[in-house]
Amino acid sequence: MKEGCKGTCSTAKEYYARGPGRMEGAKEYFWFSKIAEGKNTSVADPDKVFADGKTFWMSGIFKWMVPFNGRPSPHSIITGQWRPTTAEEAKIPMGYGAIMKLVAGNDCGGNSKSPNARMMMAVW
Image 1: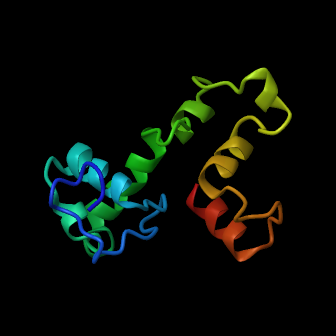
Image 2: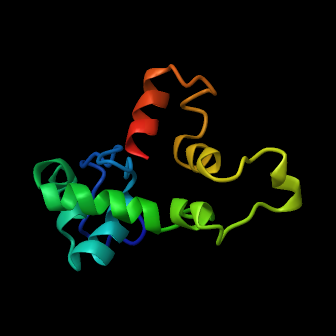
Image 3: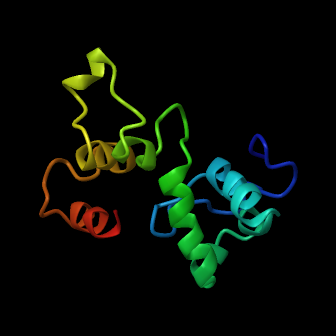
């Protein structure tokens, strides 16, 4: 059982990346269910993110607005509410580049022609 799920999520369910913002992990599904839905719908049935158009769209908004794991939200980066520390400045580009680094990590590998890079550019 994952922390915070209180019996609604289990190790039998797969909380892999779904939706336009690649929502993944029991923690993200749990908080999405609480914040966007007000109940445990998506954490109880992660496939709802694909099955329901409203849930799919809301999962993208959720990933854009809500920070996780000590990282800023993409919204905070693009609006300038978040700024890198002096030590981070050399490693993290500002604006869209910072969002790509945040949401894609090393998936894109700096190659804008890779399938992952093209998909991320299309989504964000």
